[in-house]
Image (cartoon, rainbow, N blue to C red):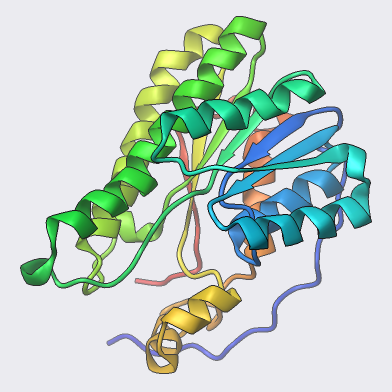
Length: 267
């Protein structure tokens, strides 16, 4: 029988250690307060030369840009509106990194969820979730890979998947299929790009708490999901970003095609 675990405190924030010194990093879906925003902040704390952040929400993106530029220096931050379902937007995103000498690390965080019973799933909903979450990730891998190969860089790609791609959850067939696809895509792309010294890995979070999730999820469901975690709590977005930084850094130099489960869920 599944039991709810007592909620453990969130650990102290981990400061940067220079793991990405001199790197140029591109992060998709980086506006707001979720995993992408946490990743953008972490790569700056880890000493990256510059970060290029993107999102589809222009106002939130501008606010995120302003906040990061004020804290870390305007010369280290760029932003561009990018819809990963549009190839031209993805190309423009990576063009924006050229002002800093070109991308070294690509963090593919863009995704779309939602709750829909499979019996009532419109094609349009299914197609949109797959296009953003899976095909959008492919577009970003493809463009980053082309840039790495052209520049002769041993670049790194980090994708954001989800434990839902492995596990059972009501109303999540579209999102689960997309995130399972991201895992398979990660392995396939890693195989294709290994000959160039390019690494491709993914992080697979369970529950990371941020304001948007609280708006679209009922308190009852959040409590249930937290109760399934061994620590009795959701991850803070920065805890997931730390795993992304590890995968982006030289500490994971022998990892490619791997999916790391950033989860405390118990069976």
